[in-house]
Amino acid sequence: MLLPKKVKYRKSQKGRNTRRQKESRGTELSFGSYGLKSLEEKWITSRELEAAYRAIGRCLQKEGKSWMRVFPDKPITKRPPEVTMGGGKGAVEYYVVPVKPGRILFEIDGISPEKAKEAFRLASSKLSIKTKIVQRES
Image 1 (cartoon, helix red, strand yellow):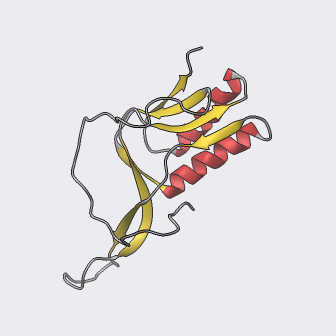
Image 2 (cartoon, rainbow, N blue to C red):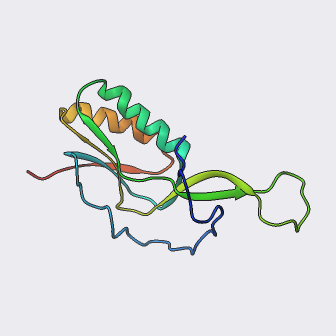
């Protein structure tokens, strides 16, 4: 699974609730001709990202190139079951990436539009958010 090699702080706070805000960074295609854009705000886990990236790779086989534009670097902690209050914050359970609407998650280049649509369809089924396929204007 995807996780950071080294972090400054092992545990982080949840952060503020910023509903109905659009993403300001990472909204345009940078590398590929086709991209998978998020339409919802949610935390995407490293498991979901890994599964989606592998689905894209399996569909592309040896042709084309793919990029993952997000990385899960936010640690989520969890206390063990039936533990009383006090005793501090729980251990890191998994990592997530907070995604807002408009963020490009994956990009593909060097393949036909039909193959790109199929790869992104498979990838979006692995993610827990609504997505749409975007194409570079030429």
